[in-house]
Length: 284
Image 1: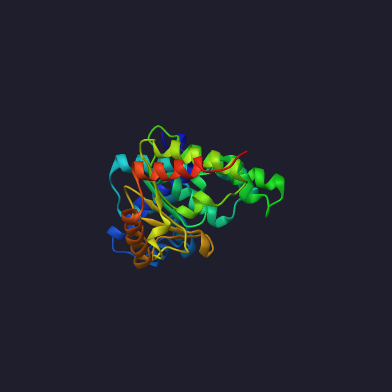
Image 2: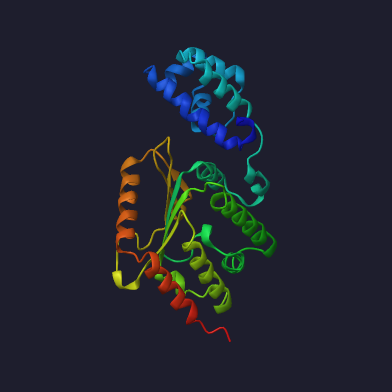
């Protein structure tokens, strides 16, 4: 039932269906707001999936858009009832920015996650001690531990589901050598990469030093893919932006990621490089 899943996923379902219904009538958001005597911001927030919607308001929208399918109306009403309440990450609001809260809502619904980072191991692949070592120089210890708890739960929800999304990671070889936390912490982190690379639905590739400069040399990014919507681009290095509407920028990063995958080591070649780096660490 819709009430048994995270409220953010129900809000997303409503966002997609209501936008489709409005566009099918040829109306703009302004047209719909004026016809219902609502504020434009109310329509925009509903279609952005950032707020819940009451069953009464949902029925008014469906009536206005001429949605007559009884089964669909019942499903959406159930989703509206399940759109209220906190999402799983609400308990971490003390360490979350609004932009990252928004991103987590998208990530929860993704069918695929494509990640590139040129400097460190991406968050979804970090061990707890590696993550703590990254945070400790800049963040008070108690806050750092809360962030690591959030990161761990995010990993579990993204990667430990019965049917997890397809995940594709491209790491720069520099991340394998940067001794965050020292050689022992890095050794455990590299072993974790080897373990993750052998999971189904997980691809871990390494971009070797020998490829030289390339489009993504200085910028990390995440691309989320969906079965029922267009890709979303997340840029942490540029104000934690979740980008859906800049299609040219999204296509640019889609092409970039595919080009990175073509030149990066994958499969046994990537595992061999990670293992060789791990075994070369002096942990004495």
